[in-house]
Amino acid sequence: MPMIKKPTGKKQKIVTAPNSRKSTAQQKHPISYHAIAILTVIVILGLSIVAFLDYSGISSSIRLTFSSEDIRQQMTSARKTLEPKFDIEQEERLETLYRAGVISSPIPTHSAKIDKCTLYSKTKEKFTTINWTQHCTIRYADVLETSLTRDQILEKLTADNDTSQIFGQPTTYTASLGATCDNLYYDERHTSTLNFLDWSRGNNLRCQLYNPSTELSTANVLHTYNSADVIREKSYLTVTKDNEYFVASLGCGKKDLFGCEKPTQDPITDFTKK
Image (cartoon, rainbow, N blue to C red; front, top):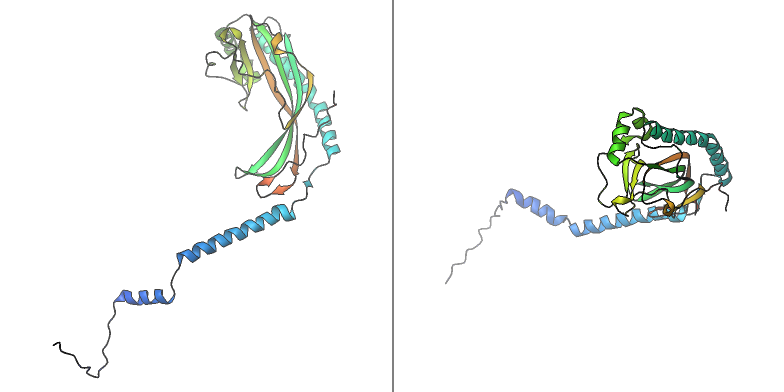
């Protein structure tokens, strides 16, 4: 039979380990990570609602920072000032090729000149559109016949001190097999300025002789040509240049949570419909 220990009447002193107080405190004020997660979600949702109200509820009206008539007047004035300068610069490019001995005449066999305006969006953090701008350029695309090979052309142009000043930097690669249009020089925007056009390489025309219209662009074709009219049995140099003459900040159209819609459906231009 087990012995039963009688109480002595004295209070026994309970000695606790150091960590037991911490455990007791945690029991009195337990930390719930689940509750923290819920609070975090609530805060994020609250901020999202505030942002949504700010963008679509309060700022849903179109905020235009321009007058359409002012844009047209400024565009007309800028073109009137700069277009003659662009014409002269294009003629200098053709004359440079003629002096270098890579073409027999500075007069193009085919020529295109296009006035084009395009809408561009300005983004913040790579996905939120915060502004729209309109850029207008005059693009020149001239085709000149040559009897030289690509290597012969580069040799003559490299020896000419004016070439880099006129056309920019020479490329360090050749076009892939089958590519009809081979870039020779490019400008500071890495846009092709001089190409060697040789259909004997194939029919894969990789460079555009002039820019076609896009969804956000409006073009006024001053003069152009049909690329099908270029004789395939001959070799050519194509001299292309985009000259920007007008830039305007248009602001924002209707805003939403993901950014800002364009304030005008098409670029604002003074182009006359044909």
